[in-house]
Amino acid sequence: MAFPLGTPVIDTMISFPTPDSSQYDFIRRQLKDAESKAFEFPVEYMFKSVPHGLPTDDPVSVTLHEMDRFNIEKGLIGCKGETAATALATFPDRFVPSTAIENPSDVMGSVRGLVEDYEKYGVRAVGVFPAGTFPQVAINDEKMYPIYAKCVELGLPIFVCAGVPGPRLPFAPQRVELIDQVMFDFPDLVFVTRHGCEPWTELAVKLLLKWPNLYYSTSAFAPKYYPKDIVEFANRRGADKVIYAGYFPMGLSLERIMKDMQDVPFRDHVWPKFLHENARRVLKLDA
Image (cartoon, rainbow, N blue to C red):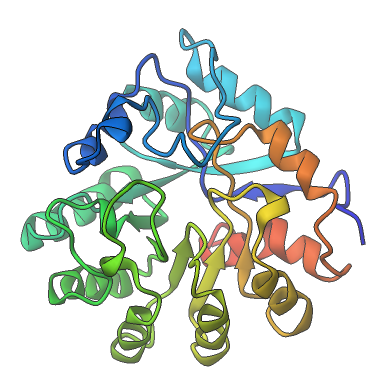
């Protein structure tokens, strides 16, 4: 079935336009090749349609306008910064707060920060980019275990980048097989992969089948490039395990995403689960 126009969407990775690219400084400090250091967006070699020239005087309105154009009911955003504060205070029905673990090597600092954001902002999710941490901390590193334990205690899902990262950083911390040990040790942890799991999507499907609380989100992929393994999995046995995530305005426009979405060969029963039902359940939006 073609993409069902009018179906509500929950976007589990969306943000706001910014006047500069300083939000990527945490990646640049690790990069070694000159070309990457010169990129405005550290993955420009992969993304040819990065939205440019978006107005930044009222970034919340810009993102809301795009959400309204494409029937995005709610968006999962970071909780920090003036723009996020404005969005969450003014449009609590449209934006869902999440927090990020920036330095897992500071174990107790990370745990305390997570709890503070849960108590202050009511965050519904936690995010981490293992290859982008400095120093890098792998998915199954012991430093991550107190964070996973706290997520279980607070009932929060954790969204974790897995697979070869786009920035020119070592991929070892994000090898998909590392997820297996984490799910074994934390059977109650709700773990959602981000950024594709490539080139190990076949393995990702095996793990998604194996572990009840493991999910896959489509962040940072134009729909025409959704991995075939994942699309087939959603159509056969994994309709409840695959969650829509975009990448606006970091790397993709919503117009590009939704145009490509028309050609994704999901079956009829998959679409509502993929677009909003699975995210609503994982983020406990009806609680």
